[in-house]
Image (cartoon, rainbow over all chains, first blue to last red; front, side):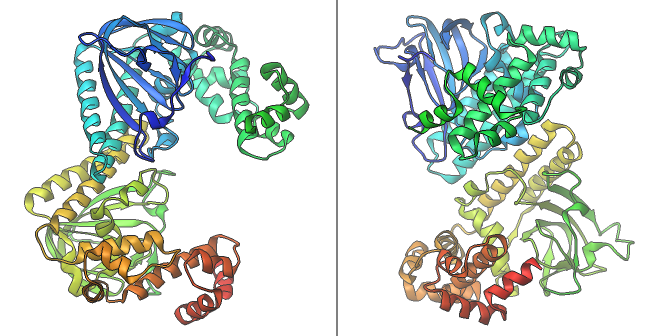
Length: 301
Length: 301
C-alpha cells in the first residue's frame, strides 16, 4: 500500500451509526472538480467496500498503484483497505456505492452461496491485474439505466434515513442491487469458455475449508477440470499457484486471530490449517518479515 | 399452556437448514379437511412465529385457550410457544406465513425502529384479549389481493430454495412483506384516538432499558400522556400495570440468563434491573413457584 495514501474513515461518508451505506453521483464531465483536494483524484483508502460504476466518458483508475483504463458501463468493486484514485483532468461521470459489510445487517453468509456474488464482490477484486481486467463487468445501455435508477432511488432512501422505513427500504434495495449484479455477473460468463467461474468455485472452497487439509484433487474437482488444466488456469486467473493462494488465505485468518484473540500460536496454526506450528512460524516470518508473536505485539501497539 | 397441545418442531415445516420460511395456502371452504389429524384443527404450538391471514369465510381461532372469531381480511401474528388451532368444521381459506426469527438473517434489530413492527409483530400478540382484539389488522379487498400475491410469490421462491438466488429473493420478499405490514399497521391507527401506539412506545422503551431504573415519568413522556392518563390507558391495553408489565419483561430476561449462562443469581438480578438479588429471588419465587436456582436446574434437566 502506498504509504502516502490518505485514509478516509467511515465518518467522512456515513453520518448515521450502524447504517453505513452511501450512494453518490459525480459529474466530472460537465463539471470538472475545482477542488485541489477532491479525494476522487488523490490516492486514498478506507475500511469499507466501494462499487464504482462509470456512466459516461472515460478515465483511468489507479488501484493499488496499477492503472486501469475504464469507460462508460464499467462496473467493479474496490475492496476495503485498497488505495485508489482517478487520474486528474479526465472527464467522466460515475456512481459510487459505498457500503460497510462489517456493520450492515444483510444476509452476507447467504450471499456466499451465489457464485456471481463471490466472483464479483470477492474474487475479481483480489485477482485483478491489467490483463485479467477483461473479467470486469461492462453493462450495456439498458442495464446501465436500470442500475442507475436503483442507485438514485437508494440515494433518496439514504437521504431520509432518519425515517426508519427509509432505512429498511434502503437495506432492501442494497440487497437487491447486490443480488442483481451477482446474477448479471454470472450471466456474463454463460456461453463463454472463461475459466473464471470454475476457478472461483475452487477459491470459494479454499475460503470455506482453509482450516483443514485441501487436496489439489478436491480443488480440480469442484472446478470441473483435470488437475493439470486446473493448475494452469488457476495460475492464469490469479497469477499464483493453488497452494500459494490457499496459504495467503490461511495467513489472513492467522493475522486476524493474532490481532483479535489471545489464542496461542500453536492453536492459531492449528485453526488455520497449518500442519504444525513450527512450519507456521517459519512461513509467517518469510511472508511478514516478523514472527507471529512480534506481529501480534505490533498490531496491538 | 395447554399441556395436551402438540409441539410441532421446525422440521415439520422447514426442510432446509438455516432457511426457516414457509408460506402455505389452505382452503377449508371448498375442500374441508379430511384428516382427523390435520394440525390446523388440533391444539399445537411451535417455537417460531406464524402469521395468519384469513382470505375467505370465517372461523374461530383458539389462541392460548381463548376463542377469537375471525373473518376474511383478518391478519395477525401468533408468536412462538403459543398454543393455537381453528375450530373444526368451520369454513375458511387462509395463508400461513411461518418464519423463525432466530435463524433468518434479516435486520431484526433495524426493524425494532419501526413502530408498526413492534406493534404488530411483538406487542399486539402479547396484549391480545377478546376485547382488545379490535386492535388487529383487517385488510380491505385491495390490500388483501396485494398481500396474497406476495405470499404466493414467496411460496414460489421457497419452492425453489435449492437455487441460491431464490433463497435470497425469498428473504428479500419476506422483509418486504414484514415492512409493508408494519407500515400498514401504523396507518391503521392514524387519525384514530387509539392509545395503542402511545402505549407501544412505552413498551418499546421498557424492552430496551429493562436493565436499569425506569420511571413512570419517562414512560408517560414517551407515550405523550400524563402519568395518570398513561397508567389508565396502559391498564386498558395490557390488562396490567406498567410496573407489572416491566417486571414480566425482567423476569423473561432473567429466565433466559438462568437457562443460557452460568452467571450468578446476583449478577443476573443486576443485569435485569432488579434493585437487589434478595428481592429478585423473592419475586421469582412468587411468579414461578420455585427459586431461581431450582428453576435453572429444572431448565437444564
